[in-house]
Amino acid sequence: VDNLAKFHLNMGECDSCHISKKGPSDDNLTHENQQCVSCHGALAELAAMDVEAKKKISPHQSHLIGDIACTACHKGHEASVAYCDACHSFGFDMPFGGKWQRKFVPIDVHKDAQDKALAAGPRESIDVVIVGSGGAGLSAAVSASENGAKVIILEKEPIAGGNTKLAAGGMNAAETQFQKKLGIQDKVSIMIDDTMKGGHEVNDPALVNILAQNSSDSIDWLTAMGADMSDVGRMGGASVNRAHRPTGGAGVGAHVAQVLYNAAVKSGADIRFNSRVVRVLEDSNGNVEGVLVEGTYTGYYVIKTRAVVMATGGFAKNNERVASYDPKLKGFAATNHPGATGDGLDVALAAGADTRDLKYIQAHPTWSPVGGVMVTEAVRGNGAILVNREGKRFVNEITTRDKASAAILQQKGESAFLFFDDSVRKSLKKIENYIHLGIVTEGKTVAELAGKMGIPAAELEQTIASYNGFVKAGKDAQFERPNMPRELAMAPYYAIEVKPAVHHSMGGVKIDTSAEVLNKGGKVIHGLFAAGEATGGVHGANRLGGNAISDIVTFGRIAGRNAAKFAEAK
Ligand code: FAD
Ligand code: MEZ
Image (cartoon, rainbow, N blue to C red; front, top):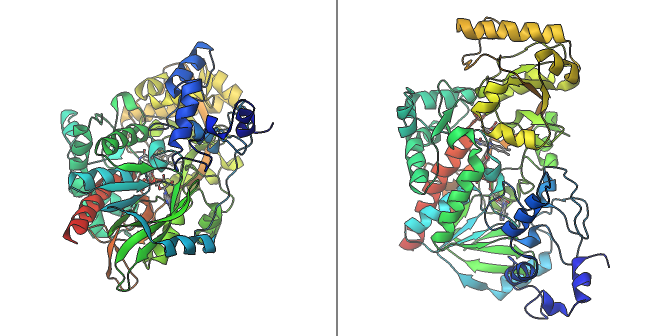
């Protein structure tokens, strides 16, 4: 046999997995997953067994959030694939395993089946539909529920969290309780100036004002739900430390997404995975009246609703689309989750939405070609430097991403090395993940590390000595780096090879300050809201590190609240 279904058939009938001969129970495969757990144990039990078996990397323990279904990886009627292999390449020895592959499927395929579902009419009705279960969607769900609405969240992937669960370095916010505790002087007006400058003034100033003015309140909102946002660090292009993250510098995204997911579940949101929205339905006046859903296992169906929040994220993982807007990025790897393909953008366009800034797509400077993962800017923010193959620094390491990426691409091999010492490692928990993933080279001395990296030891030693001199003097005489938190003098020393990879789509659907989607005539599409990376305008031509999580929480909240009010008013 070559798949799990045939294997299980040898032990019984279809009902050893399915509830009836008709096939899957629902798009979450709720019954099928319960069957897996009843025989094999829950995810946490399997993770404990992996630890006992001393597996270096457990496929059952990860940064993914929510209740991860067995069927996210273990497939019945096709080859099983480890979802983690969308980014990593662990090569787990899975039963009936295949190779990770994903093909973008346009929203307008299966026209006959779509028409049939439309003709059949709505299967159900709900106050608010939220499309996408990343941070923007989950914030919108919690906020809509706080405002009295009943919510369905539709997520095309088998797991929650989108790109949000991968976010690492922090969430920008100004004038927060945590900055005050740490004695950091910041102002909403400085966050606005930094964001406009970083975005080359292409940003919509009204949206930037909303972002900065609400940022501290969004931190408080998350904190009240149980989030730990108490560690504050520096991201590129920021004038002061304002990137909030959990204690010790742990990754921000998985934590925030988990807190929001728990709150959405508690609020009673109906979260449906493997459920792609392919169309927003409008009445003859152009008002929203429903969505057409493509359920991976149950087929197409219609949900009636007056209010839809598009929280579908960006499209950085779809290189064809990326290159169509910015040909320089053709063939680049991406830091994103596999669902960041932009079909949500197609859905919004088909509903008449206007877009802006689609040509502005950001490369993150430090992606590891060895591990396939992004190495957070916080490593540089906490003190790491960038050196080239000659062992020399070549840029202010905490400049904006567009400048840092361009500088790396000019170096020999179009890559560089992040260099740091044990004091940087101790300052940032996230670094332990990179060590765990095996992408960090270690040396007892600078010379030993240089030898392992294949760069001249004397040159690297000279670079470190001169950088440490700048730290002592409080001035970077070479590249005017504004923030040098520590000398690099504590053995052992570490290096990670890095190069730019496509990271963020700054452009997207046009919205106003109420998160309502605008059409090409600049008018509101009644009932259609959008938030997060699916939208354009907040970040202009270049997003500052830490501003996306701030964006999705603040605008997700606004979209959810206004969608709930709109649904109620009807
Ligand atoms: P997402 O979180 O991507 O969620 C969108 C969801 O919609 C996805 O789950 C997707 O599958 C789903 N979807 C799409 N289309 C459809 C459809 N048609 N039907 C149903 N579902 C659909 N930003 C920061 O500010 N700080 C950081 O430290 C940071 N670190 C990052 C690290 C990495 C590795 C990456 C990739 C990004 C990072 N970012 C960071 C950026 C930030 O994480 C994202 O911009 C942000 O999380 C996007 O949130 P979102 O809710 O808009 O979209
Ligand atoms: O905002 C981001 O994308 C970010 C801070 C990423 C990171 O380097 O951690």
